[in-house]
Image 1 (tube, helix red, strand yellow):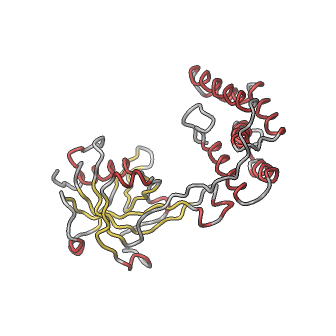
Image 2 (cartoon, rainbow, N blue to C red):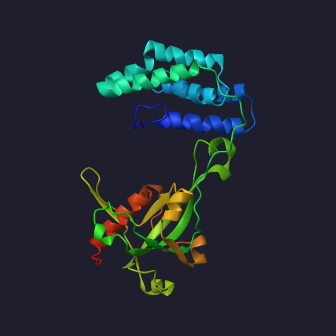
Image 3 (cartoon, one colour):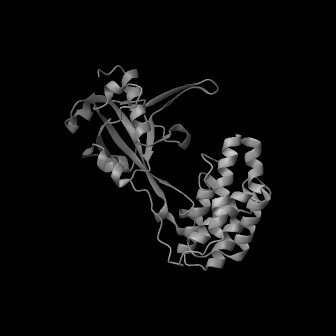
Length: 288
């Protein structure tokens, strides 16, 4: 379980419940069937620290969508009043975090005991899409200043879109392939410059290791590619990324240089990508 805060949905399990409940409703089944299917799908968590999270998150979702059943409302309030959810927090968190969690639980209880919003149709979920194709050559500008080597901010690098990855999620589990999120698997050319280059330059360039690690436990490892995703339209608009060429051969095969096995690349967002690229440029001796 991943938990990053005291709010009801600062928790991976709660977020999955929210996404799956919406997906079940969108699929066309009744409110009662959606509730039953979700609770049955999470039966394996009964008796664990995650069981209260399931009921609390489901109660929040049902109330917000005007569908709160008496069964779920009763169980959620029972969990709040009995301290069942707080027991885990008392054992694993600070006193301050426990107080904050208690406040969140009381806010949820007040919500559940208040009149529900009007029952409305459920909107289709947002799906992450990548605006490129396998084989696209990207001139990508490092824009963040909060990176290990800020002297590379403003530099362009060349990245090749190797694959468009389709990543399953709680929504696609119920609604199918078209609801899988997309991520771009990228390869890195050993080049940097102050302007967008002529795309023909790649004929004289080689691919390079994009990241190297030296973990005290697992030892040295390297990555030939990196996965970029979860990009909003606003973030994309704020970035300088230009498609300067396309090589269709990447749609069917990749150079032997790349190891695209799942455990051989890591996932990044724009900021993490800028950090990774600045480290690569410094390691390879590129001039600022």
